[in-house]
Length: 89
Image (cartoon, rainbow, N blue to C red; front, side, top):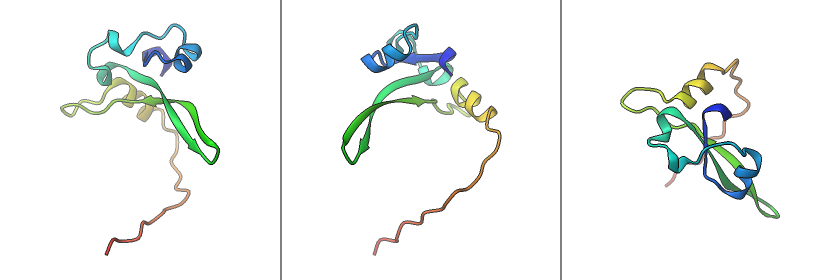
């Protein structure tokens, strides 16, 4: 994923992926690239920065490179638990 990644250029992502080009240097990142971006992880003690990797999406029925790479490398799927939300009245 890193090989086709583009960065949001935040301090965290830049520190971890120094040679990754900026998302602003490409057009339509979701077709050819994975987007590495900093997002907050909410915990009981506040927010911790983490890197989220956006895989793009299908466009006109064509799967983007990152999404295809991810899907093609799924080895097995196992359901751990199903959570059902209560119906609204």
